[in-house]
Image 1: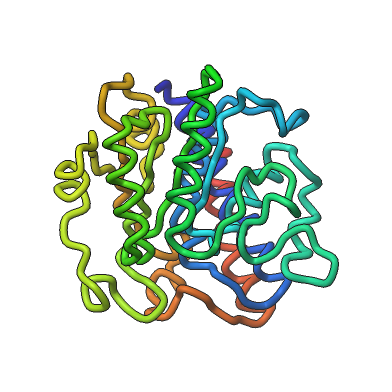
Image 2: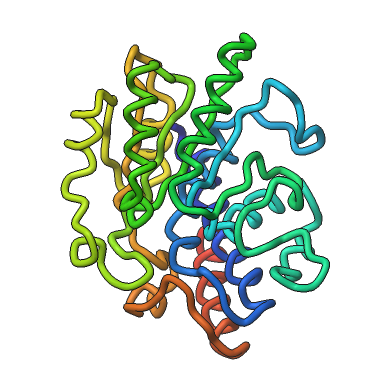
Length: 278
């Protein structure tokens, strides 16, 4: 990766964070922690990896994204807006009457969303179906699946993992957002998930752990040559990444804040973006 490409992806990640905060500010509350933690991987996916056409969102051989942790919808919406799927200002209608942007991803409402998600665990099986369907139809495309670490408490995640390895669904790449928190505490305290890399390796995956805020590491992990094993990329992330006040808030899965607080967060993010553009 050239330094120029890396810089552009880092800028895109900041813009996704800004869009996410603006989106949630419009409602005054929302799933901000787990949305911010996936901004970097979304920047890499939509900025450098996925074969997509915003002007033709339904093209059959496109790469697809299934955000199984559907509550990270605001971050996905921000990425889609920045890529031109719909006007950026529409982000500010989150969860309002008649909106196309519900708090969880919905393919019937939002242009560019490939699969409805939000019932935790179910996106893992849905992504398997998408990927297998594309393979059976001879399409040269991939399905990228984002799973939350707290979501991995669900048994369906591991059923889908067994199925993926057994059926060698190698055109689907798993991405684990290992931000170490879930709705009601640290994952290690709620239900310890132990070592993701060891577990997925035991399930028959090609597993690698990377820094979740390093766009170059993420890119290299996602674009490694395909092997006979399915791939999982474990992102070592921080819930609320990018806004220190949110990072340091224990209960940051969903937060309520006044306009002044949101503006302070946005000001900090915009200052970072300005620094990258100098």
